[in-house]
Image 1 (cartoon, rainbow, N blue to C red):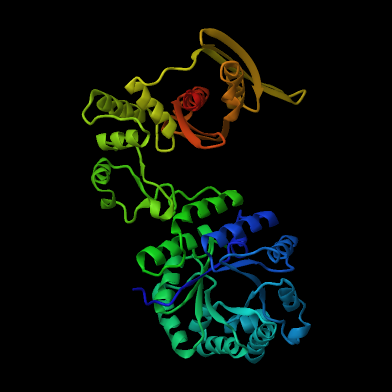
Image 2 (image 1 turned 60 degrees about the vertical axis):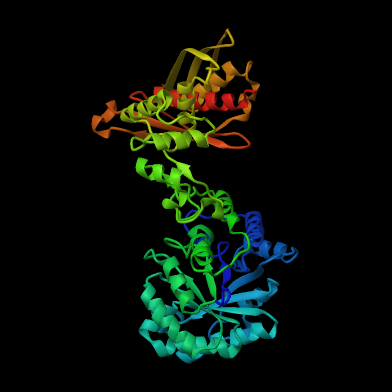
Length: 523
């Protein structure tokens, strides 16, 4: 039976997370994310800094009218200004006007910041913390005090840092949160300093870390082992500089590794992380622990052979526990086990030692020698398997294609066009199209040629196009690898093409993408 005190999750994705480079949310995005966080089981959701920008104002107005199943919404701000009565401080009044049940505010724990940044005395700084806490408590709020730069401040002047916490406690703070604001503290220091705080103060303590030294999650877990019962962080580790403590790593570590349950259904973790990435328009971190695409991916032949027999021989948890899945990669390192498991994953039975299995493996190694990679091009690999199993019938026959690009400097005019001639169901189709570039033009011309026979082609979209030089030492004669990501309303898939001619490489990847899609649509 678990006898550990419950750990509360405090999410600051919508405030601290948006301070990360390239992370931006609309007010509607913030509401959608907050609802997802609430459904997932976050205990606290920090919505932003009231009055700092119109989006945060809109968020708090809309949040006040919503029902929250699990989370308490928090507004964030600072202490009163120096030499100002707390009831006269406009920023503090704005915090109350946000109409949230929880208010989190920060104060200065570092003597350096008090004297050099605020330009005030230690006594006035402590009064600012004490007065703000008391005033917010008098208005019926749950108060979370974030002790900014606490660990750096403690290492510089322990008595001063502890005195600022004591001021918040005297004001009636519900939580004292120790912040490693610069992210430079090591786990052993967190343990030593946190244990001193726990002995000195009888108020629930939280931890807020940053990942500047790569130990943000480790520092948070160290604090919890020492007695902290609230952990602050962001989904996917968004945040200023290199980011905040990553809750998508902390949560499964707490729940699955440390017997500290924090959410009811952790299988929604991967969905939550990817949902927020998508709204932030950030690429998923494929190497993220637990929720990354490669977190349970296996490539080496001996590893795959072992996983085929016993999954947990190379998996520390079942991927489905956090909503992820096992992936078998195929490459020049592959053995028959990779091919067999990948074929099984795709629903294509291949017998070990069969001529088909050996032929697929031989083709795979030959193609990778030419520069192909199938790890991000599973659709191309599925077509390869189907061709060897003779379960694939080409849906059209290429006769020719042609691309031109014209630039008229005098008239400031440029155009890229493509022609495609294919045979579909015995009928020759010849089409011309223009595009923003050769791939776009080829795509448009091919779609025109296929549309009469396959009108569903309009459901397919090209989402991403990547080019990589395979053998750069060859200079302009080097081979080019093209990866195309395509999607419809239900799924996405990757294809690959390689050639010394970038147009040819693009065409091969494009044709694989189209053939894969049409084969899936065919009854």
